[in-house]
Length: 334
Image 1 (cartoon, one colour):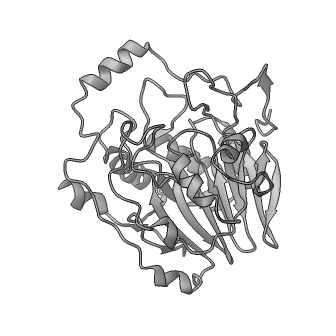
Image 2: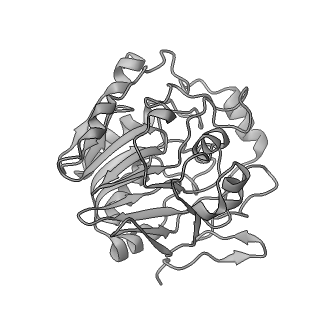
């Protein structure tokens, strides 16, 4: 049976497409693991600073598709004449407070005021590393439309976005951006909540973005599940998949993939190029900060997967050829 269907609820809580646990093991065990973690989860030598030559946005990409990785899951996607920003987080911490919580490894390579004109902003779910109040408040003064998962609009409104600019989307729901770009909200295996007492009350999603010449997949946050094959069959193949490789751990195997499962998801989706996201920006797990990309490089070689892994802030025109910038090696001394 296909797992492609609108989201289901139990009471006021959304359900995952398959049974999912947020955490395996007790909170005490997880806390102890963090306290005694010896991995270099935060870089000893901070990467960057990274900057973007803004003049590049004066010229459309030769192939029609160009990606700039701002960091984590924040991407500036240029596809066939449109500019789409995903999960914009510019704050120094992924947190409800400016003085605590996971701290950025490097400053955003483009200042908010220097962003080129946008056509759409996607917010996949309400976690702090994807929905940043300060960034949304800054974006509130503009007119760019927001596309978000069900019930996430309440936070956008709270942070100053006019309701008329917000379109909430259910899984398998579609909207048109510009003249002929179709944005489809799709299932993901994750959870939501900006506190311990409001989990699952807003939806989480991945997205397929099909423009006139390109078809790409933004995975946002998701654990591995067999539904990737359903998505690939119904909406693929994809010229580019953008999939999370960081923040995975055996204590929460259902809600984050890690690099090995990201490779499997890419293949199930029918992807041509895999771009790793959700790594190298915030300390959100127990693994060494560069471990996800190192493992992905090995896994991709074994599975004959072509990667697109630019440096933060580096606008990359997608040609179909592999491109890997080993920027993390300079930052960490290998």
